[in-house]
Amino acid sequence: TEAVARDGIVLPSRGGGKGELLSPEDESNARISRAVCMLCERNPSNYTCPRCNLQYCGLSCYRSPDHSACSEEFYKESVLQELKDMGKTEAEGKRKMQEILLGLRQKADMTHGGMGLDINKLSEDELWELLSKEEQEKFVSLLKRGDLSRVVPLWKPWWEEHEENGSSLIQVLQEDVNEPEKGHNDEVKTSQEDDEKTVKGGKSKGSSISVNVPSISANIPKLSSLCANPSPLVCYSVVNVLYSYAFSLSLFNGDTDSLMLEFCDMTLSLSEALSSGKVFNSVQEALDCGEALILLGGYLDREDPLAPARAAEAVAHIMTGRDRRDASGYSLAALSQLRRMLSKARGKLSKEGEEGTRRQKYFQANKKCEFFQAWVKDNVQQVRRLAVELWSEHNK
Image 1 (cartoon, rainbow, N blue to C red):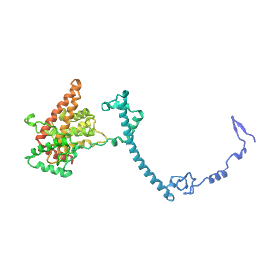
Image 2: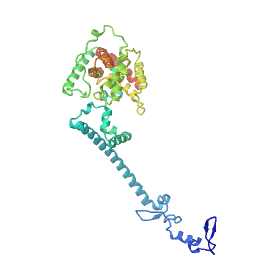
Image 3: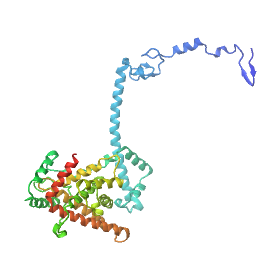
Image 4: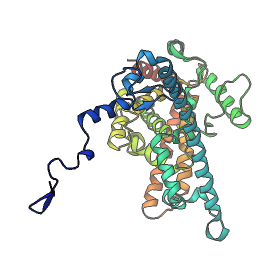
């Protein structure tokens, strides 16, 4: 019969074109002709094992006990390769980071017709603009992966070095607190002289002090020349200042030169003893005030919530001193470094306008640090008592 047209659509006639249609019998033959999984022997095979050329249908059969010799070896090699790739990625990240930094320095030197730029004087935005788009993307990628922390070494606080450590350190402190104060001032004087020699010539004989410990100010006035009758609460102000100093220095990874003004501003903003002359009535109040300002100022990194606690521990380390002969050395060193930073930062500011106001704040803070130095030098036994109390608070 001929084809029939209906509503514009041509339909084949009944019985027409039988040879073009696949009968159920033919479909069955085609399915049989297709290879069957050699493991389950039911499903058609879709893959071939590259190791043994065995044909299988899917992942379940590939992982089956009958094929474990190949599958286990494959996963073992995959894990080993992944570990190798991870190592290569870290090494590659470091290499790329070093290339970017080197390229940045070269670009800075060659800018403006080869006249050169002082890379240390460029702002962060200016340094960023020197990078190409590709370099910027690489930098952001390294930052997201955390590779920058591997390029920049983590600073180790100098105040953590002691002759004694752990529980023995606190035991020695408590023994010294219970001893009479007689003779301690002479010991401290000798130890400070050792520190001054250390600054000039590395390590003094018989001293374990690190060359990274800041040098102590050469001329610290006598406390009596500054104040005839200082308040007994001065000790807590010293704790507050050292807390802000330790937190700020750690946050800047020990680098006070690159961001000197920022370091000084942060230290002052976290210490009301320096910025406003607030008086504290206890060690805990002095620490709590500093921690509250850290939170208020937005200085706390969410990924490092223990930073305030480490700053409190740092004050305990500092007020402990290097050894039992030198309880005040670390406190004097910390206050000396802070004084130098305030003085240098002050020299970078003009005497006019807002900079003049900022300059005056640095000057006043510097004089307070000098007073605290004089107090520490004249109250060695009290410094020891504070250290014991700080360790007690820290270990609660």
